[in-house]
Length: 338
Ligand SMILES: [Fe+2]
Ligand SMILES: [Fe+2]
Image (tube, rainbow, N blue to C red; front, side, top):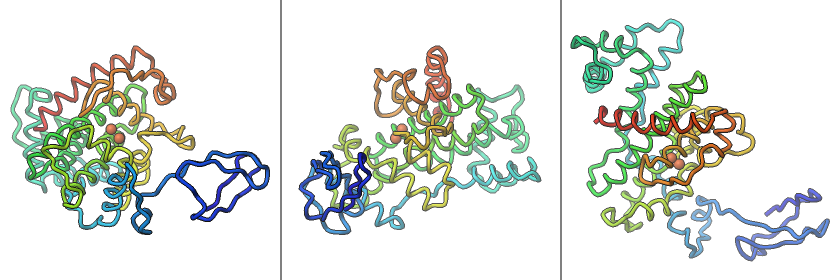
């Protein structure tokens, strides 16, 4: 292992066997500075090299390793495709509304749902619409795309295992909340990519879906979902979820811009500090945690002090109004998508 000295920049070479534990002190052989070294274990390597140790994070690492090694065997619902196709049509200068209508028509369940939504209280006009093209025109292309993205994503949060449903529903509420909030923040700060941040919001915690699937599929984890509390679930999956989600989605061919947001939404690295999309989703994530959209609530979060709120220039008043507005909007949308 190479240990880089931040003082003299010398690379110290150390045998793996000479490393006493994950946290240790070490004297640089060039400048003699006493360095404090913390080793982060890569879950995949732990299993592959057979060097597992009995540590508190052992089960957590095994879950991640199982996912990395069984990507193709994980029984997951199909990732959203229709919304991506619609976005492509819209971004292509030659695409027309008829192309979008045809695409939606090709998925009968989706077409029916869009008609229903166009006639719902939130979007409904005075006259009932039965034609898909008119329904899409009433909603507008932005809203249509947003709703289809949400409907497609909702399918990821279903299971034949009843005892998993509480966790899945909580995760869905959080995903939708972050999507709605990210879109509202984007509008508020005059950011153009509102549909993109909506999608990123829906997918930001995709890693948790992977973990749940792994826990369900592999009996050796011995998880009884009826007994698995929220705290226990997050203890097992929180640390790895961002990395796992980003990895899986990028293997599935999703664009790096989106998987980058998934990877860094919990902690923004310095090199991403100019990434407005990432700040928007990261802030939306914190806002939803603060107001309790999802499985957990932490009212003590000070949004105004976050790097994201400051980088997006959002005032305390704006943040407070987003909190109220986004919670309402998420509940309304959730009820409509049922
Ligand atoms: Fe997260
Ligand atoms: Fe989240």
